[in-house]
Length: 290
Image (cartoon, rainbow, N blue to C red):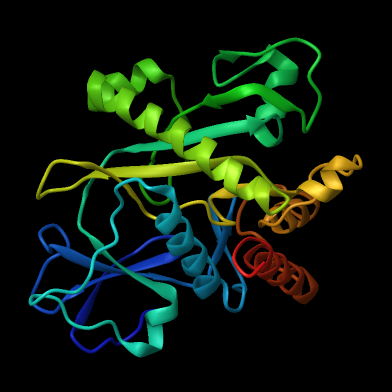
């Protein structure tokens, strides 16, 4: 859903977020962008129907909470003389951000072996080219977190796992190393914070961009949300119940059981929507309100 926001013009829509620029400005050159998180939900590179009620506000709250705790430069900005105020109707689900020059990389960090990584490990004993010890099982903690970047594909195309060497080709050696090191640093800090709340951060993906004003690399987009990360309940994990998640794994599991990944995905049942919304809210309660 695209909103009619006073002082703002809709400029772009991604899978789950909509971008607005101040009236009279263009997306390519606007110093500030209003990012509005919708209630849309995506899985397997498809936007699904229906959305998850309240999702945009929940995940925005989670992102801003993490930004305030990580201690790294990020894209959040205050209003200035050239920026309209943020309309109250979307304030809870929006972030006012700097218009960065984004790197075409999804900086993926994995602390546990699961999902597509587990499937690959069974075939190659590695994940995205990173060799791992023999004898690991689904859900095992890795000896240390691994960095497995992906090329960020245009809307409608599939992201592609790439090697670190390929990221060097894409952005240069210095920036590739900085993105990798920042990603591992942030993952370590976030994992420690989550553990204090009996939550496991199994894996996540970050995006970074360069500040056009000072050249600094900044953490951008959403960060450590239930959509960009895999969170597990540490209490359940500790008694052997692996993979009890606070993310959209419920949606992925239902789709995997009811769709062959060809054509248009089927609508999500009401109970799956309700369960997913509840898990998103439970993570907020565990991390922020506890």
